Length: 329
Image 1 (cartoon, rainbow, N blue to C red):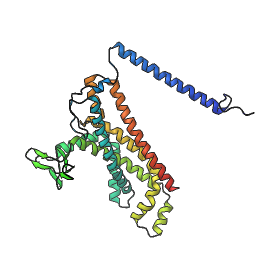
Image 2: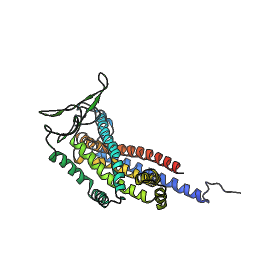
Image 3: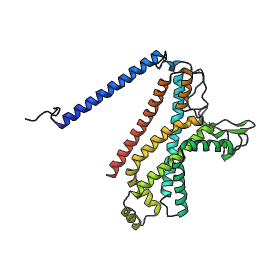
Image 4: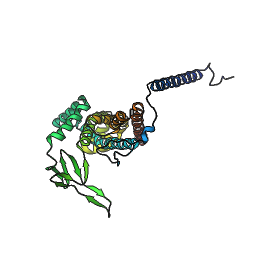
């Protein structure tokens, strides 16, 4: 007679029992830590709970897509900080991916100069701390660019200066139209304005992440068997067609998993925005801690935000990776 699968005498039964015991131990440890923390906070008469989120925040946020004022609640302030974090992270991913792919392919070029420049790009940006790069970008924007009253004209109605980047803004009032920025004696007025802090953070995240993505792309292309390239060239394909139609589609199976890690790193690295004054969710939380004293709750909110955003990013990339794997089969 066969013994049951959950029997202690079976290997699977013992493994399940040990896992259940470990889970119970972790739950008990978590409960003990939470109880101890609650007791310590109560002894020091430190209030706990998330009720403070409904209170008036009383501080201003310099920029962001979410309308916010000092009279709004802490909850809306966190929502504005989250929107700022998502905005710079999403744009950073969209810009770093093609830039990193181009640099990675450049490192495989037969052109010595191009290969050397791409190699220098990767080695410098990967070996200099990101926070130093952010300071360098911020100083370059605020010190080297012209004053807001005499900005650089990058394109029609697109201005760049120490005050940031001004772009035409689509407006829906009275039909689809564009709100165009104009240069005045007090600087550029109107349109969409991107602050120096946002530009420095976006530039730092994009360039630093592109260096890591370049190595991922280079490794993925080199993982494709050399015979594939030789066969494609023998059929008369050009170098560009070889890369676009043969190498990259096969390399995606190797590229996508580590590429996901780079996207997650970019999102987490956006928390360094506090160093240059960009109002992301970490900066908002720091201000909320100083005003409300709810340090534990604000830290938990920060952890929840980054955990949720990164889990969603990983889920989407895993779905794409599964699709790529099915196509290659």
